[in-house]
Amino acid sequence: MRFSGTTMKLLPALLCVALASTGVRAQSAAHPRGHLFIVGGGPQPPELIQRYFDLGGGTKGKFVVFAMASSDGKESGDEKADDLRKLGAEAHNYYINAEEANTDSMVKNMEGVTGIWFGGGDQVLLTKALRGTRVEKAIHDLYEKGAVVGGTSAGAAVMSDPMLTGEERHPGGVRPPSDSSQHYMTIARDNTELVPGFGMIKGALIDQHFLRRRRHNRFISAVLDSPLHLGVGIDESTALIVYPDGHWSVLGESAASIYDARHATITPAGAPVLGESGLILSVLPSGSSYYPATGKVVLPKR
Image 1 (cartoon, one colour):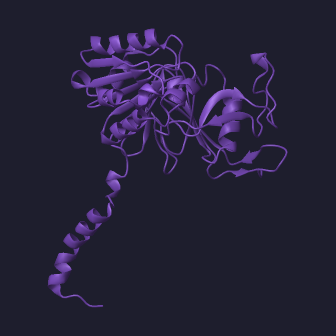
Image 2 (cartoon, helix red, strand yellow):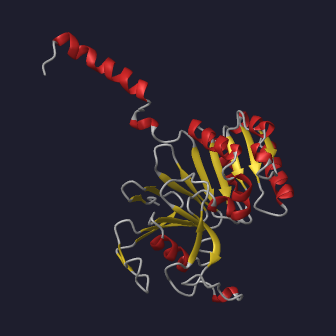
Image 3 (cartoon, helix red, strand yellow):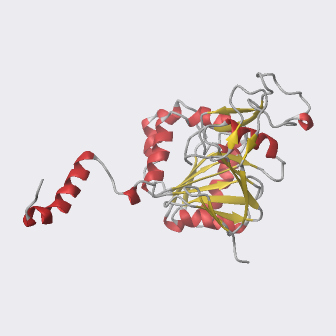
C-alpha cells in the first residue's frame, strides 16, 4: 500500500485521534499519578511525617485517616488527624464499617482528598471494612489522579494483593503452636496465610516490622509460594515510597529488604519441600532506589 505525501503528514494526527477514541493512553499515563508511602511500623521520625505531608499537598492538602485495623482506632486515628492539622492541613478520621463505606455521604467525604492514611493493627479488619466498597474504589481513583496513599504496620500490609495476614499455617493447613517463639521455624510451602488486599502496589508482596521482628522465614516462604515472586520487607521507622514512574525509594532509620525470585528456579508445587536457586536479596538503606521492572538497585553514595 502506498500513501501520498499529504496522507503521510496526516497520519500522526489520525493516529492520535484513533488512540483517543479507543481509550489507549500513552505509556507515561499508564502509571498512577500519585505516590504510595508504605511505613514498616514503629515510631515515625519527623522526616517521614513531613515527607508524607508534602506528598499529600502540604498545607493545601485534604487528608483522611482510616484506622479500623485497631480496636482503639478511633483514638489513634484522631491523633493522626490532629497531627496533620497541626501541620496546617485539613484532616479527618473516619472509623467506619463496610456498610458505611458504601454510603453516598462517605463517598462525598472523599471528594478532593489528596492524602489517605491507613493505621496499624490487624490488616484483616481493615480489608473487612473497606475492600470491595465504594470508598475503596474512591481511594484507587484518587491515587490514579495524584493523591498519596500511606499506611503503617497493618496499614502497610494492605497495600499488596495478595496480602499477608500474619497468620501461620503449617504444611497441610495445620495450625501452628500457641507459643509464638515456635512460629515460622521453617521455610515451607503453604506456610503463610495470604488473602486479598487492596492491591495499591502492583506485583509485590509487603511485610512490615521486618528486621526488628525477624520475619525472614515467613517472608521467604510467602515470596516463593506466591505467583508474584517479589516482596519487600520494610523495617520499623522506615518508608518505601512508590513513585508515579514506577520506581521505589527508601527513607527512614532502617532499611527495606527486597526478595526477588522472579527468575529463580523453585521446586514444583507438588514437591514435599520448598526450595529455590537464584533468589536475589537486596538490602536497601535510606536513600536507596529500586527499579522493579529491571531489578536495578541504586545505593546511596554515602
